[in-house]
Amino acid sequence: MREADAIIKSVTRHGICTLTLNRPERRNALSPPLLAGLAEALAAARADDAVRCVVLTGAGDRAFCAGGDLGGGMAGGGGLPARIADKAAYADLLRAVMGLGKPTLAVLNGDAYGGGVGLMLACHLVLAADDVRVGLPEIKVGLWPMMVTALLVRHVGRKTAAELMLLGEKHSAADAKALGLINRVVPRGELADATAALAGTLASRSPAVMKLGLDALHETADLPLDPALDALRDRLMLNTMLADAAEGITAFMQKRPPVWKGR
Image 1 (tube, one colour):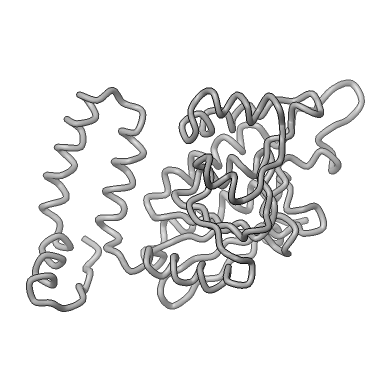
Image 2: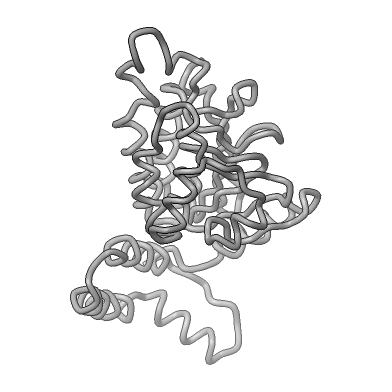
C-alpha cells in the first residue's frame, strides 16, 4: 500500500480536517505506510492556515486502530524485526499529534488497542461510540506497550496504568471514560452528528489563541508548579497582546459573534 492510500484526508469549508486510517481489512493496524502517510498528513495540516481542527478516525466500523500489525510482518522467526511498528516513526508521530498547535479529536468508530490507544491519548479530546472497546493486550503476546506507557501514566496515574498494562483486559467505552481515557461516549447512531458538533466548536475558536494555549498545555503539563506558573504567566502576557483577544472582548461587549483574525 502506498502512503497516499494509507490515509484518507478531507477538509470542510469550516477548516475541519479529517484524517482516516485506511486499513479496514487489518483493523487499521499500524504499518510503515500508514505511519508515514499520517505523519505527512499531519505536517500538511500543521502548515495549512485554513485547517482549524484535525479529526482522527478509522475506516470501517470495527476498529479505530488495532495497534501494531502483528499479523502483517511485525513478528517473525528469530525475534521481532527492527521495524516493530517503526519504533522511531511511532514516537515521532505521537509527538507530532501532541505538538500540532491545533485541536485534535480522536473519534473511536471502533475498538482501540495497543498503539491505537497511544494514538487516541495523543489527541486532545476523544469521542467514542458506546459499543467500542479499549485495551492494551500486548502483555498477552509477550510485549509491553512501551511508548504508550508515557502517555497512559499521564492520563490515569500509576496504579491504573499498571493495571491496564499488566492485565491486558478490554474495557467498554463507558469504563474507559470513567478511567479518564475518553472524554465523551455517544450511541453509535449519533457518532457522526456528535463529531460534527464537537469539531465545529473547536474549529470556531481563535486559531491564534488555540495554538498559544495548546503549546502552553503541552510545554508545562509536566513541569513542577512554580516554573509552570512562571511560564504560563508569560504566556498570558502574550495572550493579552493578540488581536484576537481584543476582538473577543470587543465582540463580547457588543453582544456579537467574534470575527477572528488569527493573530
